Image 1 (cartoon, rainbow over the protein chains, first blue to last red):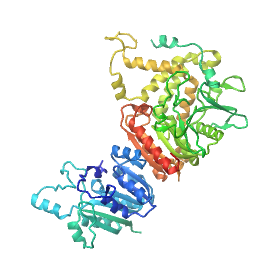
Image 2: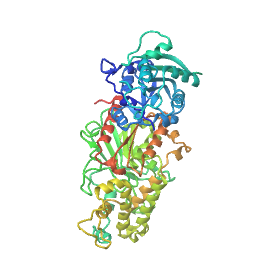
Image 3: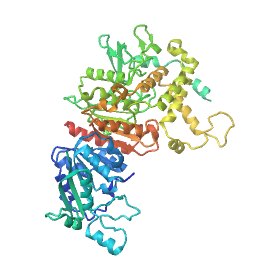
Image 4: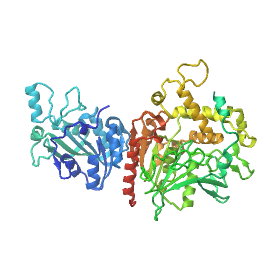
Length: 221
Length: 396
């Protein structure tokens, strides 16, 4: 069992909020979704992203969430959310059931990230994945000079008490995409606050200075 | 002690009158030209349905909510029960300002076919003989109950339900509605149920039926004609079943090992323990309001229930491309219809591409939790209906 409710565990005081108290990283994800499409949000937490998607992009949204409180909050809000686990329950969905399958800040908490990603690209025509970049310079410095597993504002847990068991860097993630044959349609590196780094840069630069990343992936046919 | 208490209850069968002419209910009678075609291969005609309504049907006839009752429930969902004088069995959920708001919705609740509160059942008078049907009454299924409800809706001029909701056997009817009449249901709320009755549940039902049939007063099902009543058998059936509606934790919390009105054991077979006394009371009060043969028929209907079997053995076929919005709810301590059964429903609905929400509620109250004060259940029902109302374009 892994936590897919990573969003709840994150200390979000540093997360930027757009007008209407909307998380900026959610807006980045929402910006990648075509209006009117069918979306599955895996690890949807309290349903905030689903709400944004249905209100601003008119999507037919569904969610999976592992925490009971999260699910019950979502259902009470009228969202179509079921209690489930990204590691076990994605297998139950048929092929091509969705236009997009979203995994927001949850990949690193799954026990088999590769399998989760493969299922996402099977269930959905496209996948959107956001994750914290473990290649960020601050994390590298903490490990280099501190000699201990890094803890940051966005990743406050100790190594022995965190749902995040599969950290990766932007470079690692790109390599996994290549391995499973996923095509990268878009990628955004984000600051710690969730605001996008709005300039073109080589991958090594993003891998060093992007604190989070969002990828829009397509199944290679 | 059981014997003394049970024989002390009122004499004579109270059922016959209620079965044909139910109090505080509306009765619709379908004539010989409107038979109810049963899964057993025979037709029931003429027959009647007893029902209650609450709230007002809007002009467009789009705000109707059908509530399906459980095994021992009836149409008196939100008003005083005419036999027991107790409040409606779900008045905590249904009423003005309640999650199923009768100021907003037109709520319909009918007694199932096979029941004993005014819809045709084994204690009703067989029009061919002028005597109670008894075991001559055909065996009915969950789908038969739903077909009869559909005829009631036709009679009321309601083409499509805004929502159909129910727990336990009521939840089975909800699922059957969605599978059989997907275009007559906008949303569906099956609570604490399953798409098939498990072997364990069939086994419990069989024990209950055997208890009824072992009572010499049952008289091969002819007790109404012979002027007897298998009270003891039915009470024992109810006692056994009641245990399955609770949980070990709930029994421990409510009764523990406490003694009933005494400080020490009596070294006899009196009801020394509170839990014994409670179960005896449950059994005795049940026989006052329920017909023994109806108990046989309705438990049988649940046993036969298996939606997948009706659809080539593939559950998701039953809901293929379903337009219905589902909200499935289960309870952590329900071991009669455990969460795994609800998950199977959700998996099938997902595989069928249906829109489904699923919540499991933490409680120690067991299967009965769906009838009790569970604020989380109320919030979920409210939120689900609210969203469905918007999606349906229903005026506030």
